[in-house]
Length: 191
Image (cartoon, rainbow, N blue to C red; front, side, top):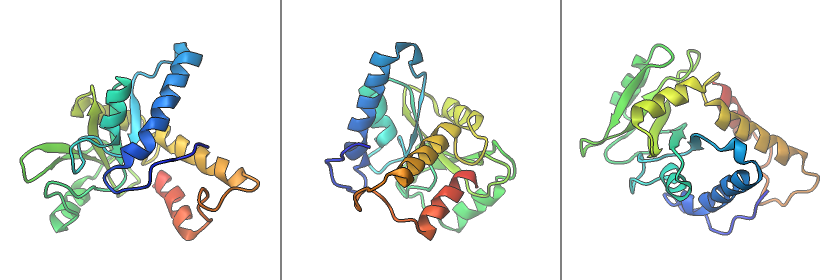
């Protein structure tokens, strides 16, 4: 549990979350140098971002570690929208590992939609964060998927929710109430 000092502002999530993540990476490097991460998977975006520099980019630059953005929802940027064409492309992903490029109106490929798991109809949106190619990012994310969401992100999410559930008396602004929405989020991790 850490205090968050910056308010939530859409498009500026990195300024709220990355300082804590950088501190965690530095603490790991100091306390357990044999556990040096080879790559970081970030629950968020990299280049697929309104400013072309999402949380995965920010964290990667500050830690100088390869980082990959893995988002569960499409961030609508540079003309990318969840329109009928996008839905048709998503339906075309028939098997685990199939992808299609997320090309903005600028002509730049900002990421890839990936069907990470055969039993999931929802893709992941993979984008480069730092020091990794898009092809390598997609292969690594796919290799980490037992379910829809890559296992490192899935386990972090499961364990953080479990930690919050076990708190005897947590402040209301820290805990999200048990709701159909929180159950839906947990189900998304396996869908």
